[in-house]
Image: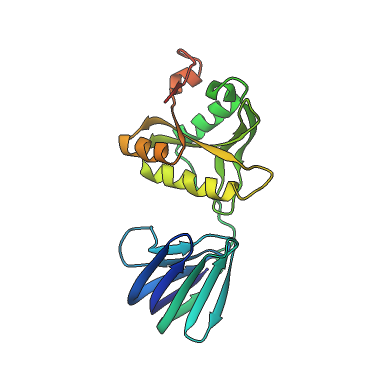
Length: 219
């Protein structure tokens, strides 16, 4: 990973246009090719970014990042304050909460509870930004990515959205639909998921274990 702290301005040219005026910012260049620009707030969320696959060209005073759609992120460098690279190695991945891991296992074993004709492709399907909990097919043969949480919040919907963006670039899988599954889904998360065409499923842990009625409530 390369970390650059610089006074810079940023212009995005693509489906929309956006401009960040000159200010000190952190620029992250990751091994997967992604480039993101961060301020000293907003927690983890970047001000602007370019997802892989993309190319980075460095000229005197400017970086130009271009993705396969021809969209450009132009970073005009005024002063570089820090520039370092670090080899992080292979990440072991997120160790999930025990309940989440068990929910994933149970749902994978009983994937037909998502709908008649559903079939499992695999658990922990790998992507460049981490594994999708479950990848399966619906009764029409369409690909479905399922993200499982104990408590469903906006962050989980954002995570699934990023997975769907990558998965839909694979012609062998596309089009890929998303399902956000949790024991409890917050109203804001449900609204965001619905707006993005992502289905929401409330999981009943006891029902999946066969203790109670084994039907999921699909909304």
